[in-house]
Length: 280
Image (cartoon, rainbow, N blue to C red; front, side, top):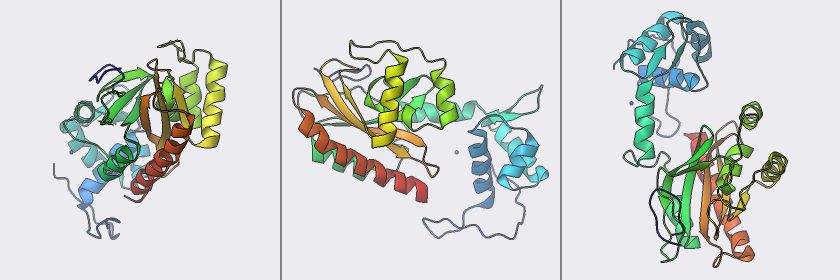
């Protein structure tokens, strides 16, 4: 068990506005946002669900085709949106990947306003606190607060593992939209990372069903032998997973009773962050 970095170890163009007569107000600050920026964000959120034609986008964001087109053109010029030359559909562009890369390598900071809650969780457990998101068939660490103990589990921001691996992976899978989950599982290769990694699909499905029922997932040596963890989902306003919040440490220090105690702390912290996301 050592303190590692990457590789698990124990240790935002002005836009023309259209007057809709509807007042836009930020729920959190009470300050009216810039309408064109709010509309651009709405459009990009729609495209986050996949490529769309102009007509569908305008319907979903409740704007005219002309206004939607102007915003899309600006986003396209900034590299945030691409347009398929054959179908005419729009999708997210390379500018979005640059922003994601900044989140992954830590340059942009943590994407949730939850530093205080995460620090409180680490203080309460004295173990490593990690946040993972799904990236295709892998899980990706986007935030980590290492344990103060000399012997600890760390992986490092940017570290990846199979999406089926560990408590974080189970949470990221269990709380996905059902259709998306089935599509992923149909082509997921269950590669082992340790002797304890789940490599049987029936066993994985059973573990996901249990996670959906209990709201948490456990791992014992599935990612790194000798490491254990408990994870809970951070959920959006639809009840789907945004990220997995985990507490991890060495098996020698985290027995069953200790993990059960940490389960409540992880669950509570994840719900706090979820509530902030839902009301932002």
